[in-house]
Length: 249
Image 1: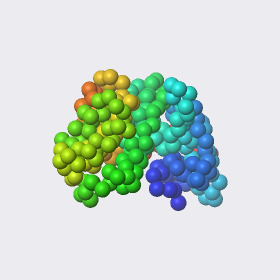
Image 2: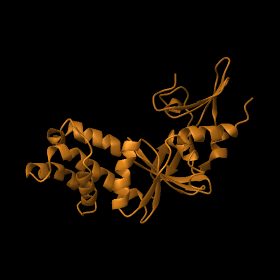
Image 3: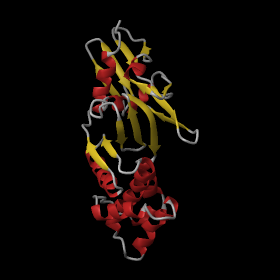
C-alpha cells in the first residue's frame, strides 16, 4: 500500500505515485532532480516499480541549493507545484503550509527554487514538550487577535528564540490568556516564516488544508503581502499532467 501522505493517480492498469513512497524508507528510492525542473523533467525521470499486471511509476523528488550553498529537498510537493502551473501562468510564488512548509518559486513553468520551514514540527514540539506546554489549554481554537499579536511580535528585534519566551512571560503577567497562548505561538512561528520566505509585497498562492491556510492568509496580509487560496487538489492535477507526458508501454 502507498504510505500516508502519498498521492496516487490510477487507471485500469497503470498507477502513478508521488510522495514518501519514493523515499529511502518507502518502496523504492527515487532520488532527486535538481532545480530547475518542470513537467517534462519529472515525466522523463520516473522510476518503474516491477509489479505483475499493472504499470507503476514513482515520481522523483526535487533538490535545490539555498543562497548559502545548503541543500533543500522536497518529495511530493513538486507534484502539487506542477498542478499549480496553470493557476500561476507558469510563474509565481506558491506556499504549502504544513509540518515542513514549502515556499516554491515557479518561473517559465518550472520549479526554480524553494524554501523550507519546519514550522508545524516546531509548533508541535514547543506546545507539547517544553515549558510552554504548561500554559496551553487543551482547547486550541484559533484566537485571531492573539495570532496577529504573535505575527506583529515577529517583526520586533531579538529573534525567534527570544520571542518564544514571551509566550510564557505574557501569560505569567496576565497579559495573555492561556486559551490564546497557542494562537499567539502560531502567530510568532508563522510570522517569522512569512517574513523570511516572502519577498516584500509578494502575491502568494496558498495550497493546503483550509484551516491552516486561513492562519497564513492572516499572517501574509499582516506582513504586507496578498494571497489567493487555491484548490487543494493540486497534487492530483500535477500527477495527471505528468501522466499525460508519460509514454505508457
